[in-house]
Image 1 (spheres, rainbow, N blue to C red):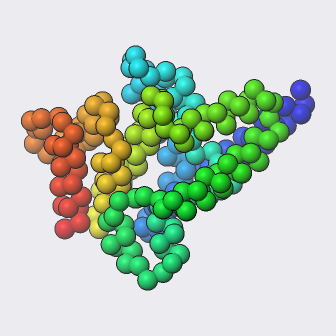
Image 2: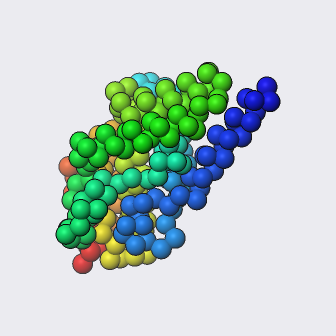
Length: 229
């Protein structure tokens, strides 16, 4: 029992490190005192609870497990971004880069996966098998993105980042957030998530006549363009 308790304390210590790990995307963009990975994960989990609790196709308890565990390896592996590889190569225009779609190369994706697998092994290695499998299986399910729960949490992850981008834009009008819009555009498909985005945009605009995906994402583009002007 003492060994199990010590392992839990170690796990919580690693999880606590996420409260002190800034989200690297905001660091690259020069956001002062940016949110932490834990800040992001908390709102992803809250959105998961609120947006799936009455969805018959999604097991909310399972989705919450995925939301809570999806960034845990970053406590040791760090918060990689899709732009790291190009920035390391140099001779790249950061402004143009941050206007592009966020996508990992095959090599970068494999390296990220290996680093996070190793980190998760270290974080959970001393836990009882049942608890270890709970965390590792949730992370692997999220990474695979094949179950209804994984798909919706992936979408919420992108939507939360876009909501945060818009919140930062309100106080930093010149902030370049196009990559976050494109990330949401590529990922978010769920009607309820799109409606949430529409309401966020509607607070600053006239009534939205049609709450379909193209109209909502067009409004998002307009918001980005006006913020950059």
